[in-house]
Length: 491
Image (cartoon, rainbow, N blue to C red; front, side):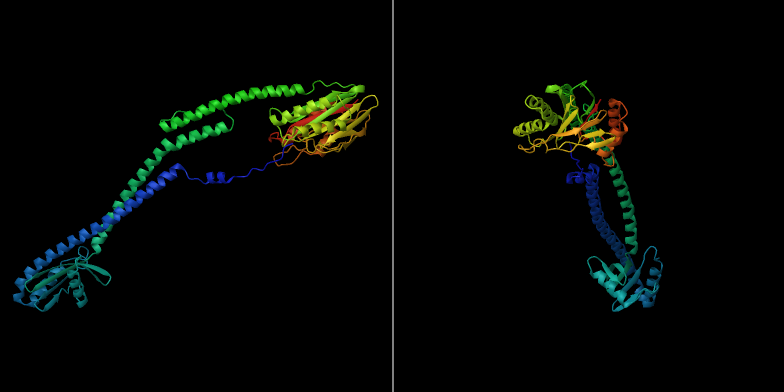
């Protein structure tokens, strides 16, 4: 008897499924920090480079202003018209492509002249140039543009020459985009190289170790990992290999012990059962190496026979130990009383006195009297035996509660009319409760139907067909509970 357990994903499993890889944890922070550092460096370097180029432009404009002031100093005696013509000629030679926004303004005494060739002359332009000349950065705003101005004063002549910073910024932007593209390419190359190193040094060894541990978890004990070039992984692999070998040795020892336990349990079961006037066939399949089911056929006084089938909760070694105790208790009980109900009561009291936690059992007893062709049975919460009589299947219900549940439990013995050719099937709940992949149980009705369909076949063949039908119903599903069948034909 084994309850179905629904598997649920634990919170820890959910966290593992959403965990990031080592590659992610190393590459993302390293590249993020490196990228941020590069961006900060580029920003600082850009500001420094821009300031340096603006200063160079200012010095260039100032040198131009010095040359222009000296020339104006010689031309002023030819009149202001001559000076105006010279200023327009100099400014006109400057193309916007090379010197965007180039403009000249000069003061001679109290007279202010401006180049008019590019149509930029205005009082606002003069004020912006004077503001830039007074500013330590040599820059000022003029409409949508930013000016850089170089100026010089020679005597009573002050010359202002300005340009827009458009070309300076455009050239610097182009250089920095090129530089940034190169840095990004180098960063990508570095990331690829780092990723390759991580895969070779960390990811692949980790996957190898995980595959080995998974293989061990699947039962391939003794499997070994390969050697690694990294000392830390080599040490970890050696520890896993040692663990695998130790588990393999422990499993081999356990298998030997379980083989002995299986052999002992098989010897506790009756073999080649021969009862006068009856044909008997049995089947015993534990879900593990040993099981919690057992059956027995015991001779009684006055040429009577007792058939016993029991099922302990659970399976495996603990259930097998309780089953062995039940067999001993039944064998002891029949020495004092042969009534099935009294035998169940005795076994129940002894099992309750042992105080075994979480170990209950069901049991069905059937007493056969060949002399008067009488069958009596008692059941302690067991799977109802099925009696095939006159072509119909009759279920023999329980006559008391499970063994080990209540010390003062009472059981009843009931007589069942028997005719020649009738068949009795005693089974544990591993037969009707066998499930397929869809969770559908084999069921009592199907068991009874097979009992009817095989009534004309030899009893051993019929039992083999029933067991085969149960196996086919399960398909690829493992046996989750012990399976015991005892079939009797009254011949």
